[in-house]
Image (cartoon, rainbow, N blue to C red; front, side, top):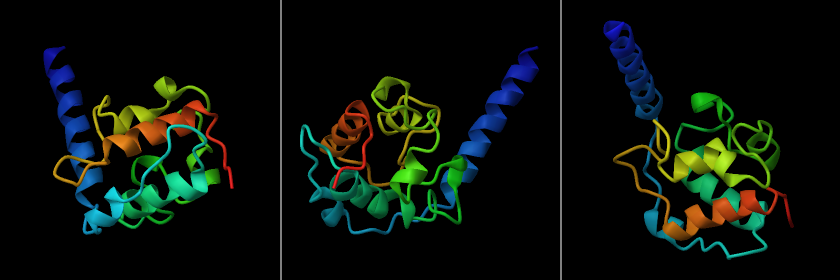
Length: 136
């Protein structure tokens, strides 16, 4: 039984490394830090999508082609298509929020990659809490 548990853990860790190893984190970090998300009235288009575009989509991970972990962050429709990933109004039940907060087996962005700022993590959380809407 212990061998089975150890095997499952080892396979999970290997799968996580495999998923994150294909990501390219060569974005301009200063540009990312300049994206400030407000404390309320968060717009997917104006605040969330630019963060995803800089850190998640063009890095070879969560784009339409690579779909790392089965998650695509290229549009509002893609981001909100699965209630397991984004549960509108429930950030604590959203895998996206859990991952960016580092509360999962595979925190995002992966280790050794430039992290999201505290403001961006709080902003994405607020966006989910406010219903994950696509405000203009």
